[in-house]
Image (tube, rainbow, N blue to C red; front, side, top):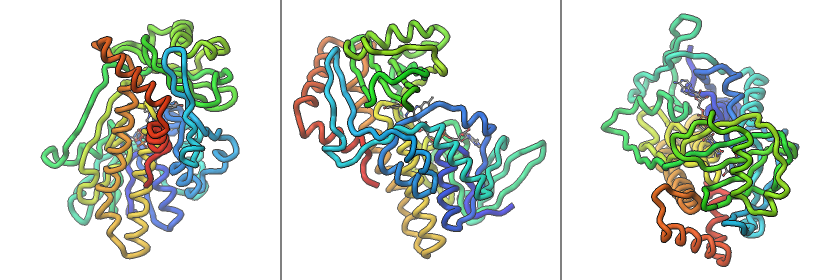
Length: 389
Ligand code: FAD
Ligand code: DHB
């Protein structure tokens, strides 16, 4: 088989890239290791920047989001039993959109099917070859047979544990990493959200986050120690801990119920550079991971797609390769911006195991400054709604 762009990974970044390219007449094949049911069942991100919303619309997958998504014009940042609202809309003129990653992947799969796009799932042992030459190809196994796809370019959209990044020789790749000494225990429950706006709470017992998916679906998180296992958290234990960490007036109106999903995610910051090697481009989690504080992971994957999509359109439709040449630099610049914001917000809001009284006072004082300073809130809002592309 031959295609123009071979996309490894059928998560949100791979599917979105393939959908955008198709609409410009550029041919691609998506190779996904897992089954479609598995990909669609993964509960992950839920809060989209305006740039992400615009690109989903451009891809023709914005209809359900525009009808059912919830515009989020402000976000609440809280300390212990107090909080304040950052008016994102008034400060930046922009709002976030609450619309789950599972919905996005569902819409993208439906759109790919409707356009008869090629998405090969349960592709085993996917391997890019000769990406440092002008004739790259990708091999995989399916139904017991080996297959080969010849292509012009390979897009590595295969997440943190994928094969694409590992194709880049070790003496070429530089990895930057910070692992945080805690994780997030997340619960999805079919209960009315305690707040229509997202709440980030810094508490001496640890961080808590109240988010939502729709009027009867809440997404809540609490910080837990590194190494904790989800089996040791009953629903009751989760609700008790969550209630203790959010402001009292919210705790009083919290509606609890059985969890429909419960999992623990570790927190890390990670960036691999360069994001291009020869004819291989790294996109999304394949190149970088941010801690979830600030909801940047999926949004960053989408901004990489934006740069690569425009670069490929320049190459195929306009005879202009400048986008391809600057992809690595442009994408990484925005990645570092969001990496810095997520690291800062994580550090400000979480309890650290070795934290001294001094460290805690520094966090409280910075939160107090954020409450009082319009300039600090403007800096927060500008980064929260997403740095410009
Ligand atoms: P992925 O979604 O990881 O997709 C990669 C795809 O490639 C997968 O479908 C995978 O099966 C496939 N693949 C992997 N290896 C291969 C291979 N060798 N061959 C073929 N296919 C392969 N972000 C937020 O903003 N907010 C959140 O609350 C949030 N929560 C998260 C919770 C968890 C547990 C995780 C892991 C991530 C979370 N994120 C969150 C991050 C966000 O979900 C990711 O940034 C986003 O999914 C990145 O999309 P992606 O397409 O680049 O990668
Ligand atoms: C969600 C996740 C985040 O990391 C965040 O900062 C806000 C919301 C969520 O899953 O809804």
